[in-house]
Image 1 (cartoon, helix red, strand yellow):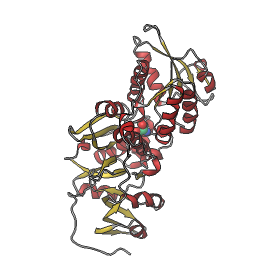
Image 2 (spheres, rainbow, N blue to C red):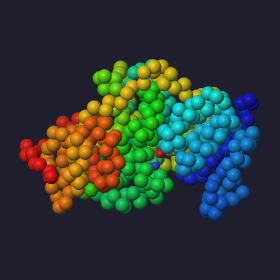
Image 3 (cartoon, rainbow, N blue to C red):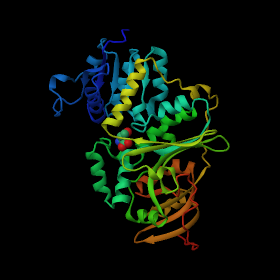
Length: 415
Ligand code: HSE
């Protein structure tokens, strides 16, 4: 291939990420990349480019042999699946920003690349502008990792920062996150922890050589957060962050979870504010390192897509080194115990969750809050019930051991 030739990109989707990429390429005129075709879904939607810039038929782009690289940046994971799998069947070089697609279909996406010779990169799918996938995949390819954890959703972190730093209300903060283009089309994904779960699944495949299915990861969010929960955090000298984490126990079993957590000033994640993401990679030899950067927004995410475009064009593909090295993928540590704070109006949850070591029971009107210990297995099994009950649950610290929480000696029965 002529290295001076302008490389043609076929872009699917022209939302926050697509426009971010388009804008970066328009500003960086010296770069040899041009968005040649853009495929969008809705012909009636008002767009910042003339109508003739768009096509509405994905096949037109998929069949266009003059395109060098395809970029998938649409929010619907099912449509993204159809487009990306078809592109890989055609042996194309594909870049995607769709975390849900990769989290749910990684084994199939790997198999398609092997079978048809295409390549798929997805740096933008995890932690926006932070180059965490390639860092974990390449830099840490030979060092065993003990833990990878952090804040993987910019919208929920933005909301929590507005609540704790600027005393804003939840609804107002969420609206701002949506207006700034951080949130998903369905913001439930952000605030309920589901988006963080998708990103954690991807990260876990690269960090521990285990592609973990989203169903295996318990996720809890801030959608039922109350003023009372925030007061509890403040009384304990902490803020609340939504933490996605996967670590290996001393038995070599894996603990993946998305759980809001108390975070105090001594915690690496304390300084990660607004729409920023922060990922702490803990190597067996290098120790813990914090990677911090913008986790959402058109330009940071578009920049990650651009980096993938450049890499894919130079022949890079993920080696999945740990995945190929791992003969016995770690099992889940279902017995691992977390210290949690639970607030609910349904006392039955204490029994169904198997919450033990109950302390600090507080009652307010028709709800109660309690500190207790719960196993990973019970969190996975009961997560839907917790969501249905509108209960709020969080870890007492981001390392899941709540040593700094002030406890009352009093023990109260909840019934
Ligand atoms: N809605 C996502 C977030 C966008 O807030 O982090 C980036 O994946």
